[in-house]
Image (cartoon, rainbow, N blue to C red; front, top):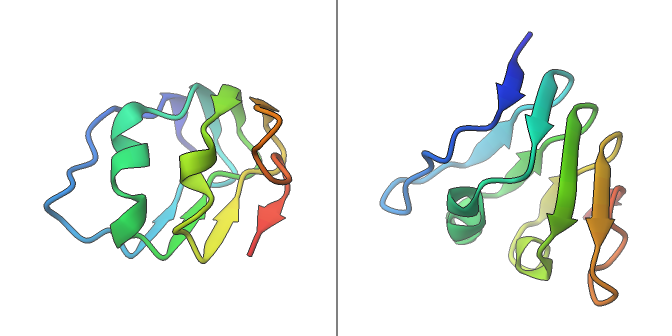
Length: 87
């Protein structure tokens, strides 16, 4: 069971096929480095945590699967279906 903030440590020079941090007690916002690796990631699972803040629309375009449900995100009006499973 992980808790606290997601570290801002994802590197763009590595392939992160699946990032699954679901069902923990993670808090805070999505770190900037996570937005930078969405082009080399096929699945991002952050559901059922305590994450909050605004989600940038750049997160949704390139990801085949993105689940942000069960958190406290706010969304810009151009962000599709924040807080739901994005396929």
